[in-house]
Each structure stands twice: as C-alpha cells, then as structure tokens.
Image (tube, rainbow over the protein chains, first blue to last red):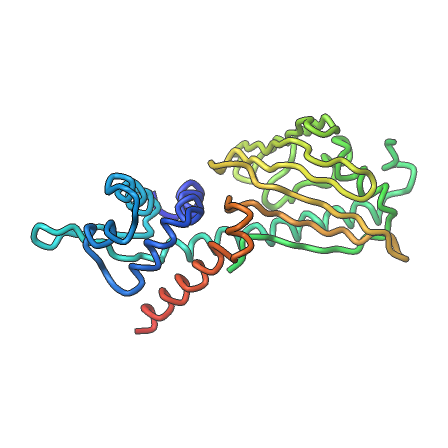
Length: 115
Length: 146
C-alpha cells in the first residue's frame, strides 16, 4: 500500500492541519518521545495521539521503541510521491488542451456549432 | 513543489465555440481522450450551476474509469468551473476551472486544477502547508545527499 493515490490523499489530509504541521516541524530537529511532543501542546494527550496516528497513517512519521519510550521520527519520503502524483496531472491536461485546440482549429465552423 | 496545475493555450476559435466544445457532450466525446492512453465512451452534462457531469471511458488496457463532478460556475463564454471526482482516486473532489479570454486570434484558455489540499483561508494566507512542504522536501534532499 505504498505510493497509490489513496495514500497521497492521506498525506494531504495529514498536512492540512496546523497541529500536525507543528508536530512535523518539531520532529525536524530529530526524533522525540511522544511525551515531550504532547507537552508542547495545550490539548489532551489522547488528542495529540490522534494527530500522531494520522501522521503515521500517512507515513509522514515513523514510530519506534527505545526501552519503554515510544519515539517519533520524521519521514518526508511520501511528499516526493505527492509531488510526482501532481506532476502527472500536468501532461494529462497539456495533451487534453492540445486535442481541444486541434479539434476546434481543424473542424469546419458549421460542424461543431451545436448551440 | 506546488499544489495547483495551471496550463494555458491559444486557440483560433472564438470563446463561445471553445466554451461549447468544453460543455457539449457530443463535442467532448470527439476530442476528450488520448487514443494511446484512454478513450471516452460516454459523456453526460447537466449544464447549470449545481448540475452534474460525468465522463466514462476505457484505458488502452481495457480498464473502465469514470470522472464526475458538479458545475460550480457556468458563465458562457468567459468562465467554467466544475468539481473533479475521478473513480481512480479517493478523497474530496478537486476543482477544475477554465477561463476564456478573447484575443485577436481567438481565445486564450487558462486551465487551473486546484484543491488538492484543503486548508482554511488564514492558513492559505500564511502560506500554510506549502511552506511545510518546502522545508520537508529540503529535509529529505539533505538526508539523501548525506
């Protein structure tokens, strides 16, 4: 289940929230235990856990264990896939618009006039 | 990295005809598609604000697909906006906008495909997620280079 469209949408959803972006920003400095992530926010611990779960589902963070600690680490790879996915829309529209141009410029006036 | 696809093309036909080619199912069937990749087999369009459109087709490999949406703005011959909801993607629909500008030689058509990320107006103003994407990407690149 990597690099399909559904997962890419998960990435967007994960990034669309300011709290989750703040978490990602914190993790830029290195991996952190879940406790110290939670302490930075005024919201409840379960609420923070929910944000972490969404980030994990989007594979933007990776959870690991170190002794009794749960640590989170940033994983920015999915963003590259998102970029590729969006890039694939560009040639699709380019070719479609070229078709439209060709259609309109080569047809006889009367043939395409359906109004 | 950008979340909006913008394409522009000059067409030697008046905006009215370009608008009609983009909204009339009979004409859409004639040009929408790419024989080497996919072809459309059916188009339906209820051309009014809130009306639905739907395109069905087949890929070169014989897989069927559908894209559908709803008309958001229908202002012939200057503006057409509809939502875009393809069968091969999940998540909320995105938005496709066509702007038609009359030129000396015909029409300048500008396509904008956007809405891949939902965010609030304030976040958009602040550059929100795009800024995050920027630094996350540079983070990955640094790590790959290391």
